[in-house]
Amino acid sequence: MSNSASTDASIRRRALVPKDACPMAMAAEILGDRWTLLILREAFYGVQRYDDMRADLGAPRSTLTDRLAKLVEMGLLERRPYQEPGERAREAYGLSAAGRDLAVTFMALTQWGEAHALKGPAPVDVIDRKTGRPLRVALVDEKGRPAKIENAVLAPKAR
Amino acid sequence: MSNSASTDASIRRRALVPKDACPMAMAAEILGDRWTLLILREAFYGVQRYDDMRADLGAPRSTLTDRLAKLVEMGLLERRPYQEPGERAREAYGLSAAGRDLAVTFMALTQWGEAHALKGPAPVDVIDRKTGRPLRVALVDEKGRPAKIENAVLAPKAR
DNA sequence: CCCCTGATATTGAATTTTGAACTCAGGGGG
DNA sequence: CCCCCTGAGTTCAAAATTCAATATCAGGGG
Image 1 (tube, protein in one colour):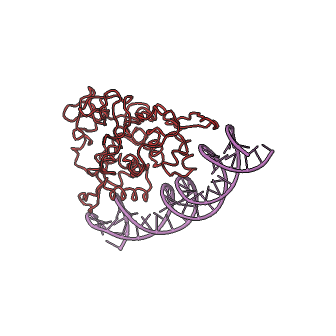
Image 2 (cartoon, rainbow over the protein chains, first blue to last red; image 1 turned 60 degrees about the vertical axis):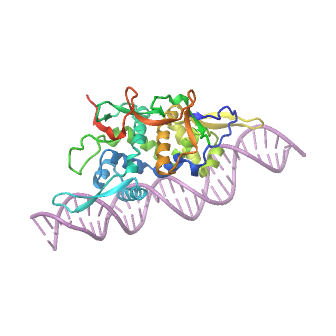
Image 3 (spheres, each protein chain N blue to C red; image 1 turned 120 degrees about the horizontal axis):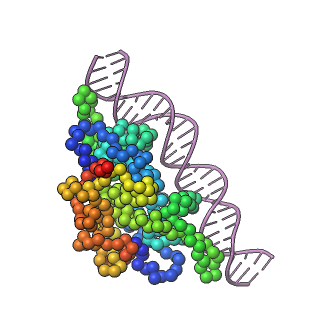
């Protein structure tokens, strides 16, 4: 993936889209925090309770509380009341629709992490519940045909 | 995308993979920082010079220096000497192979950002240089056939 | 009443980030 | 020689955030 203006030999280059109008930059402002990413990971694994998240992540209490509140406020997580037998009512945290829409992103991150961080396969697969086949994230064109990342270039939208 | 053990009605749930063995968590440790994401975005837009990045991002100098050094150390960016006419030798920062492998992730993030942050289309497209067709990130099975995220479930790998 | 678990808040120390200023490095020009 | 310039990096102190330890609160049960 490269900028299609790369025939310009100058080393000086500014981003094609200013930060304030760039969806990628805006997403980075929301997601650019370690604990935020780790909490969303927990949510994708189906972990919903504060104490379970804390046990899995080793997050400081006030940091976890803060980030969960922010994720709820931003609309990525939602609070869900629950009550276990013999216990009082509490609230769990589940992915909202906007949060669930990050699934592909988190899968892509996982694929990258397998190659470059863990340097080996993850102990879990994502499979298609209907077909049983393993799934991954890839680049496709508008007809769903596979494409190669090496052929991908950025271009201003036709207007 | 859900955990395939979701037939278990208990609200108590721990992540299927411990944080230390999870490629997603490991990637989050590397990428879970606002400036890091914004700098990588710059790199994907082809921006390589310190001063261009600083102008685009408004990053404090010491923060930009720090993150660039870390990205080089982690192997996502590499330093490239350059010299403009009438100027001295300097160093630019370009994506390494590992950095380029984040392209799909950053495209996925962009797609999410379009829907949930910017709430409209980005002013640029990613297109296939060979076909001219716009490209996007999607879920596919191992034969490249499209799959639906709603059918995606996590499952332990067969062993 | 007490105990328990689980969620949130508080406090102070430690760490990180930031804005402002400074430094350094080469090339060019007078 | 000196000065200027741009660009990259450093330093410093103030501001902000994070973190560990502790405190508080909330219901259910005994």
